[in-house]
Length: 473
Image (cartoon, rainbow, N blue to C red; front, top):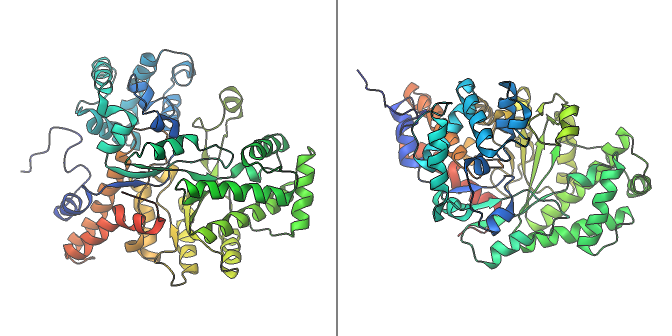
């Protein structure tokens, strides 16, 4: 009879076959990390932040955990309120046993194991001792933000940044010659919100100040955005991103875009149709800039955000009140990509889907615009947000495998706001190896470990490194 490991997180966690274990341990485990999309604050890296306690590094900005705590009946004061950090951690520990079969249960214990060597399950009883143990360990030099990036084998990471950000912290990391690449990602979501003039105008004023271009017309807006795009490139940025309900593809003339811009600057909100039209033109501009410089364009599609208006007013955006949306994706995405392709201006592109019912839409769309210039030019991105868990990852991998080339997939990212989230790469790798290992065991894939293991290794790191063009030491 097989003896089961005593620890929950053990060497063969999630690996249910001999083939899966061989793929993971021989080909995936030791690959470095290229975390090309996250929401980590570059200031913390530039200043080499030393976290005082596990609340600061683990709970301070993690809306996944906040969402679970609310579902467990935890008062908001212990989530985003004014309660003491230790009390908030104890409230999270009380919640953890209730997250069984939620990916948070896996992530929690992988992270405790990898960062602190803790095998004990987190609950109300174990929490006080774990608080003390982690507090002591977080005081060590290797547990600063830069120390963590090195011990977690991160070669480079890409934060998420507004064109109006000054990028001072990225510049500081570069000036310090920090061995891990810390690069900005150009995310101009606020350039699209002409239906919200107060937000749009405040952003335009900030963009004017930072770019030195007075944003008084649609043409000058494009000029200012181009100037900032150039600056992002100068500090190593090679990716853009946008978060959209669905892609915009209602193209109009520059004169029409100028009219919508002028109205917004005068405080008149654009109609839904006008916002769609204006956003289409801004996205085209970003795509063209990306193509000119050899960047990668990311598009995160389908989430419906900030559903709870009460909490949005009370706390703000991005606090764990988001959901999967059900907007039609295929037609506008097709029109947008085709417009850029027709202009010979389609950059390398990654499209991320949050609604699993659209996986086959995204998988087939990615295959429409291959042009022989680069393998996997349009990528069906990894399972995102509500789908970056075992089942969601498997759905995405299976759809990509059936409809495209899994071998060219650029793999996983954290999409996180926590420096303890890098084991999500391990979670993905174990899931990938377990899925393919089952195929080997069933005879669906040959037991040629040079062939299959080489593919796994490339998905873990080499494909992303080759595709994204980031400077990696």
